[in-house]
Amino acid sequence: MARFILNEARLRPERRLSLAEAGDEGVTKESNRKRPARILPFMRDDGFIDLTGEDKLWRLHRVSAVVLPILVIIHLSLRLPAPVGWLEAAWAPLRDGVEDALLIALALVAAFHVLVGIRHLRLLCPMLWPRAAQRRNFMAWCIAAERYSGLTLAGFLVLHLCLVFAATLFYAELDGLIRRSGGGLVTLAEGFVLMLLVMHGIGGIRVLIQERLNTHRLDRPLGLLAMTCALLTLIAWYLAAGR
Figure 1 (cartoon, rainbow, N blue to C red):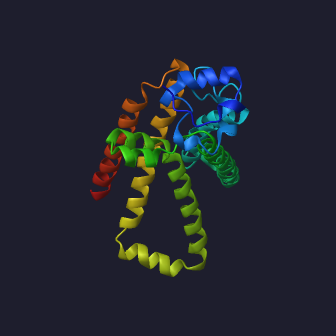
Figure 2: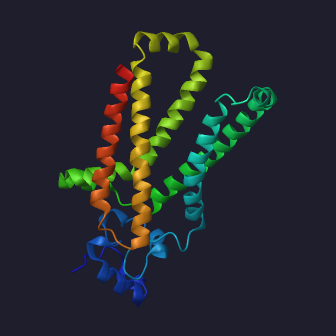
């Protein structure tokens, strides 16, 4: 029997039926008590949340997820030397301008991806951290970590920009701190960013599978896979950095 948190009198009959059929797997979760008006427009008749058919921003969010790694690969490939000498000589005057344009495009696409991702979490995602702590379930913690990895990556991006700005003002102090740590702080930050990237990438695959197959049954195994691959990536990074 579904536990109704939303006010039934304010819902259309088909919405009441979908809520009754959804049960604990639909939008009747306790975390959604304060925002039913935002959730209902995206709720399908079977009680699940679906953004693909109604939200154009979410579609563009998927496109930006593909464009981001392409821009990163192009930016990294531009730093490689050209295979032919005359091509390197012709490309050298244009390299700086093209790299600056790519960095601006990368920043704009990344900002859009982050903002739409935060909007998605604010509108639709359940509050997984309290649920995980309440259940004391490792699988629930894996799913929560995978879903919020994008938000953590955004935090690392903001921290990186703050450090770049601070380096222009306190270069000597920051350089001394990094040297005293033996490069450990940089290695730690890079390892965590790689771990979060792997986790967030598998999370994106989970969302695509969930929408294409119209099922939530793969959430737990893919959440566990994301956590396992992220930890293995972090360990491999530290082993490679220690050599």
